[in-house]
Image 1 (cartoon, rainbow, N blue to C red):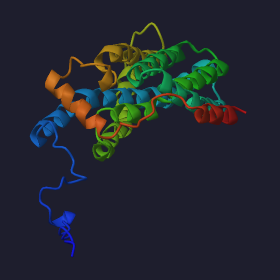
Image 2: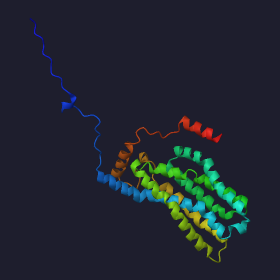
Image 3: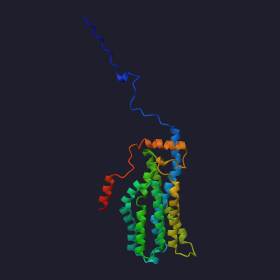
Length: 274
């Protein structure tokens, strides 16, 4: 009679303490306290600069209303209908070039593109001081809309390089709130310029210059003040350790991110243009 081998008892995985555990995330290479310090530093460095740009964008897009109150209409023969057309031309430029600007954010680094936009709309806003007829003002306002078309989405995209998704909403609300502050500051500036005497130019011309030139200066400074993508290298804003934390945070959410232009995006742009 042959010996029948005994079956070995089955080992259940749930009872085996030596079995490797799946779905366990690797520990983070930094402490929660270090991450909080980094976020606070982002709030003190990158976010205020984006807020400043957004503030200037709203001052420059709304200054025509204040210029109207200090002599613009009378000096260039601007009727009420022509004023409304000039106001609408800004939004026409924004709508027509919003998609193209969005594609540029894929081609040009967003930090660089924000600087280009700021220099562009600041220069165009300043050129409003040279308008001598309604047609010129309408054309200038159109190009102002062109340069501001992709600025707001560019800000949101840029901040997404540095903040987690759960952190973004509060930061977007912070810079979007600058639109309300711009109305207050623009009114104060217009009041001061309107009361100035002995100027070689009219008050409304001075207003466009006073509000446009600082934007150009800030736009130029943006090329150096706003760092590029974290993957492009360490910025002077951050230490090497902080830069590694930024890269680690970003890698958790952008492993499969696509930074190029797909054929579907090109087709969508062509369809929109047609």
